[in-house]
Image 1 (cartoon, rainbow, N blue to C red):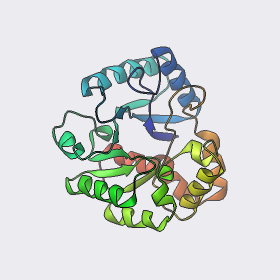
Image 2: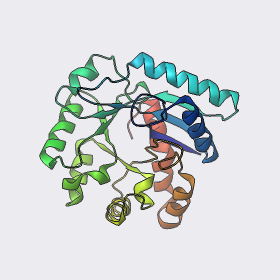
Image 3: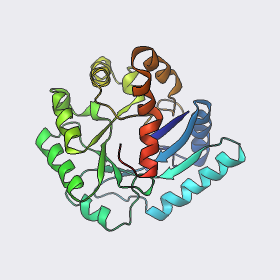
Image 4: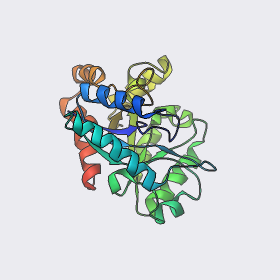
Length: 239
């Protein structure tokens, strides 16, 4: 069983699922991949018409009903993938947006071209406000991948690290695959997630990837990446 903490499965809110039919197909794929729980994480970016907390919860409830009707035994939780900007702490403090499963954890995205100082200072601001940042798909950030020891500094600050299934499997090129494998080899990852956007090119598939990882890495480490750490997010306890 797996828990997916990064998914754009809610339809019509961002560049993820386009309609309810596609969301239903994604749920079916997730179920077939033994994903037990999903934290839904639509994008929230500056100067965009972002989905309200109410809209996220309503669409999530619609998908939850479909999952229940089909006997998937799956539970969905509300969340958000926040694109970092200076006003994000104020937005979080207003309590009008969805943190990860209503916990202190927040999923934070940066531009691949942001420099390390900007990323570090942004994450420090989130931490200082009492939140626990999860860095979304860290393998994309060029400044950090040039020197992966910087990841240790971010973890020491109190941050957590997520990588995408597609990156592990080489769907975004050899360099990204190599960087992601290096992160895993050095124990610098807390979460493996699908970052699913549709039912075709970026589906919520994880099972084949996890089976490969179990053959390469310590079983306890992989258990943490795919289930145990995510369960702690849902329970709002420290990892």
